[in-house]
Length: 127
Length: 108
Image 1 (tube, chains in turn green, purple):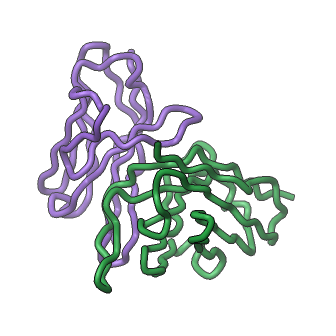
Image 2 (image 1 turned 60 degrees about the horizontal axis):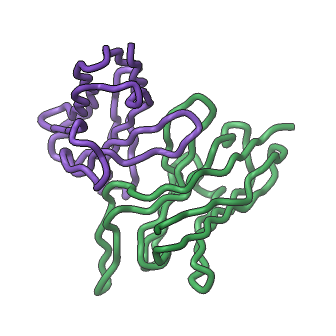
């Protein structure tokens, strides 16, 4: 069974840092396009960041320069380092896998639907 | 960049058909995907590539895409279909995922 399990959320003061983790089973993180997607209270889905199989990363403008996506191939985990947190970063953060994204022969192919989601972890930024 | 606009809410009686629009400039040129999200749960993919269904998704869910509007259609709506629905595309120019504004479907 394919499964993603997030951890690391919590209450943090504005300006602080937090690191989220996502443990994957049934899939290989390094072979997929892996993303973080967040949802603020009562709001819609917002894509945050993606890491490709070749290590290429992209970020939403709202988090660029503050958040860093990475992975640990030996542990098959995905991470999101969040620095300089703001109240507007308060959200449930989901770890997610692209349905077809992969890299081969120096090229990456993907950017499709997200077919696997974790259960989410709550991040609250408040003093 | 893409902006995807959905109606905030759609109401439908049980057994009837719900249509959820997703508007975007020339969205017909993109592959559109749809997600269902129930309160307190993670989103679930219900339609991908405009009109394909993942395994386990009822045939009641279908999609279409043309021009400036993509549409998710739920036929024979049941109480369990009450949820928020989001459309999504891939913006290849910025390599970003773009989600629609979301539609709350209420079953009367």
